[in-house]
Structure formats: structure tokens, C-alpha cells
Amino acid sequence: MKRRSTFWIVYGFLLLVTAFAGIEGAAWLATPSWPGYLLRPAPVGVDAVAQWSAGMPDLSFAINRWQMRERSIAKPAGAAFRSVFVGDSFLEGGFTRAALPARVEGRFVDAGHDDMEAVNLGVAGTSPIEYYYRIKDVALKIAPDAVVLSFYSGNDTVTEPFPGEHPPLPFVAELPRPSLLGEVAPHIAWQTVNALRLSGAATGGKYAPNEHQVITEALSKPRAEGLPILVKLMHQYYFPELPEATIEEVLARGGDRFWEEFRPRRFDREYLQGWILDGVISMETSSSKLAMTPEDAAAAIPANEIKATMSWLTATDRLLKAHGVKFLVAAIPVGTMDPAFAEFWKPWPRYYSYTLTRAAYHEAMVAALAKSGIPFVDLADDLRGVRGTYRKTDLHWTEEGHEVVAARLAKEVMALRR
Image (cartoon, rainbow, N blue to C red; front, side, top):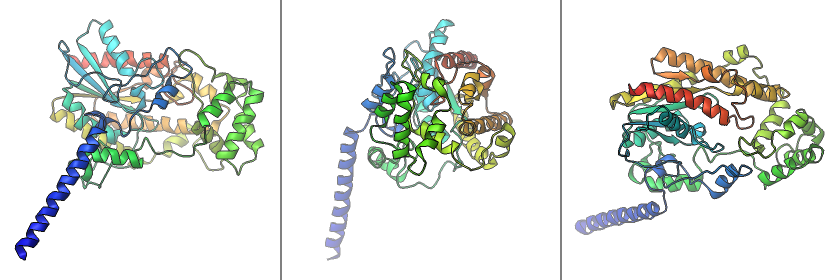
């Protein structure tokens, strides 16, 4: 009897393992190949690509089997120095003719260094936590000579400190973050996160039906006709508690200048989205206390957040040093650097206060980096006072902003080669 029980226990275990392996195999067939599943928590949708390119027919957004705008895993013959850029949407470059690393590589060629690469591992909606694991599990496996980590002060600070080399693992987490399921069945983990929308990029707030189409239609009309469409949309789906007159007063403050900013053009087209209107209305009608001066913003920064964020950058520095790879942090400031950006948002001072607050975060992070000894470059030195470098709606760089930053970072990476 005991032998028979043992047999059924072993048989059941083997059956369970076989079934689990079969599910992992099936998930493997439906999951992007390595390193794609470690880079993106979900595929780039056709609709997203179409929206990125809408209104700018000269712009294309192509992705390969990595789900990235990239090339090969192996270093090409003749490539003597491979730099790998890790970061978020500032690297991904969804609204620009060429992503930052591609522009940097162009600068290498212009300087006579056609044997240097700038590989793009930028993924929107990620943070220094994902940057660390993306470097550990992907960047280090494609033979980098240097890693450039772009840190955006607008939203890259975190409150979760680095847990050490062997942290307790959750059951499932967005890759490349480690988890129990990801350790044994990474393809099942990817499918689970994708299906349950557990990734940071998938989380979102309110969203109205056909929102993009409604906003596009409103902006195609004269302001007198289009403004009521936006007011109705925001009242119905975002702010039913606010009178339409209140919403209209907020949105009308920019006059024709606000309306003209969203006209179609070949490049640098601005996209007005529901989350932007939501933020403007909610903050301008709120009675909560906000930091309205740089001094107030600096005083409100939680020290533990800067400390937690620095713990991930320090861990990344330590990781790369252990592998003999050079490291550089590129500290990206917010749009307060651009006088045209500040002027555009002047009618909405409470909404602009967020950018003002994040500018204070930038100063705090730069000060912390300077004390840490981690090699870094403060891109505020290059962007400060240069008009037209920041997009006014999504706070990313314009074509001009990309060129300013590409020139500085190409210079810095070429210096790392020496």
C-alpha cells in the first residue's frame, strides 16, 4: 500500500511538472523572443504606432522582434565600442523622427567614429528599478563597453529602496523584475502580467470612449466650435460634479494660442490627450496647497525618496563596475528649462506647479549624484534657456531638444572610450 501511494505521489508530481512545462512551452510560442519579453511587458500595438505617426506623415515608428527600435544582439563586425542606453520614453522616442541613441550614433559617425554603437534599450513607463534589472538581464548580455542610464526627474524617482542581491520574491512581477514565477517560467510570467495588466505601463486612470477621436475632432474646428466639445467630454466622463462653465473657464484661459498649438505639422506635433486635460482641470479647480515657488518645491521633497532612488543607481554602478563596464548617468531635467514651455503654461499656474516641483527633484538628485561619486552629466547645463526644446503636452524633447542632448551625450560617450 505504501509503495502504491508513493507511486501515485511521484506520478502526480511528474504529471504536474509535465503539464506546467507544456504550458510554458505554449506561452513561449506566443511570447516575444529574448530579449523582447524582458524589455516590454506588452507588445507595441498597431493602434499605438498609428497614433504616434498620425498627422506627421514623414515620421515612422518601426519595431523589430525585440519589440524595440533596434538591431542585433551580437556586436557587429567592425564595432569597436558599444554603448547601451537604458531609460524610459525619452529614449524610446515615440514622437520623434529618430530616437536619442540613433542621433548619438549619427554624431559618432560625423566625428569619424563609425566603429561606435549606441544601442537603445529605452522602454516607456519604466523606472530605475526596471533599469537595474534590464541592465543586469539584458544589457550585460550584449557585450557593452559602456552603459548610459537616462534618469528623468519628472517621474523617475521611486520610494522602494534596493532590496539587496537576494530579495524575497513576489509570486509574479513585471519582467525584468524578479519573481517566483518568472524564475521558473518567464514566458508564463510575461503572459500573466500582460493578461492581467499588472505592468506599470498598463495602469491608467479615467478614459472616455473614443477619446482620441473626439479630441481630434474638437481641435480640427475653430476654437468657438471646438471648445464646447472638449468641455462636454470632460464634464461627462471626468468631472460630472463640476459645472460646465467652470470647465470652460479653465480650458479657455490660453485663448487662440492654446488652440493653435495642436495644429497638424510635419514634425513636433503636439497631442492633446485626456489625461492632460484631466490634470489641468483637476489641479486648477483644487483647493489643495501646492508648491508655487522653487523654494516651496525644494522644501517639500521627501528625503527618503531621493535616498531610495539613489540606492538603485548605486546598485547599478556597483553591478557595472563588477563587470568592468563604464557607467554614466544622464540626468534629464523637466520643461522649466525651456522659456517657451514656461510661457505656454503660465495661464495655469497650479498645473505648472507639478513641473516646478519636479524641477526641485532634479536639483536634489543632481546634488545626491555629485556626493555619490557616480559619473553623471546634468543635461540642464545644455538645455537651460534654449527655446523650443520641450514638447508642451507630454513634456518630452522636441526635435531641437533631441539634437541638443545628442550633441552633449555623444561627446560624453566618446570621452568614455578613451
